[in-house]
Length: 61
Image (cartoon, rainbow, N blue to C red; front, side):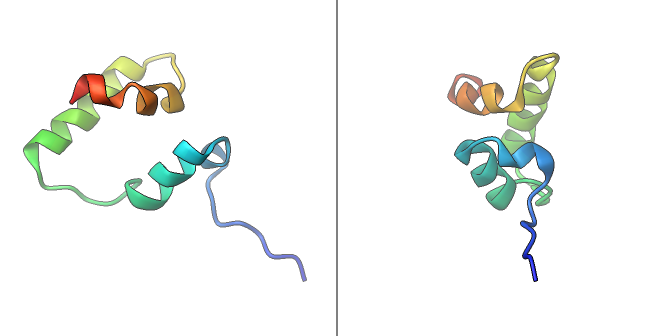
């Protein structure tokens, strides 16, 4: 029997994506600064890969 990975298709591209998927994706946050960080990343991401945004994350913090 073949075991399938439980990753979303987008998270299988790189280690950075998998780390984000496992530790942050779809986990509720209640910290205003963290929510603003995610909102900023989403806004700047338009047309770019999410992996690139994760690499540039420190700039937005």
